[in-house]
View 1 (tube, rainbow, N blue to C red):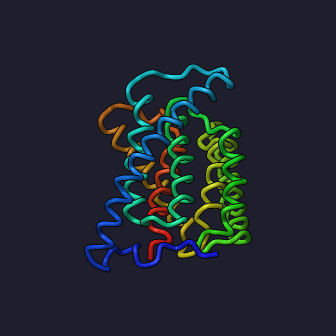
View 2: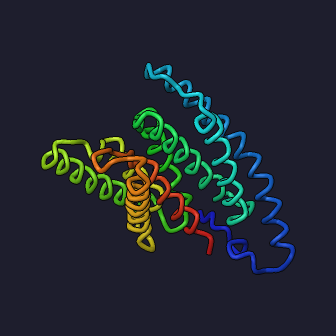
Length: 234
């Protein structure tokens, strides 16, 4: 079953398609705002379950709402009113939750990742250029690679440069993007690139020192979002 968006991907079919794309974007932006509120409520619940304190700064409260709304709007314009948009939007919601929870607590929770992985395998049947086998193999390979990197970092440097939450996140990214058009390679490359550039800027502007660590999850999630936006809209 192919859920590809067809001609809406490029919006080159005339004013009607552009209007449809704009209306979809506007409506989906509102859906994204509601989803962002749900992500915030989920974060508060997870903090209580995990016995963590949840922050109340503006970026912690409204960041998920604003970012999810903007991303839903962009994806709505890109893909149009097709079933694939629902699948992509689910992954956007998961990645936004990871971004803000990891920034706040430096944790990527199994309570989020395990159900997301199960959903990723189930929905791989309905995702263009993916399928169960490609999804599973890509997730396993990507997760194993980062597991080896995490173990090597702990052995040689005595520190958790990469946590096991990052390993599970990378496996999840492999499950949802697959290997078609080297998607997983692009996603991981972008994640590492984003982390390196932002870390360098934070050191240059003396926000962090060379000894300070950063959470990798948000950057890996950002790389995945870029690739998800590009995939399947041809």
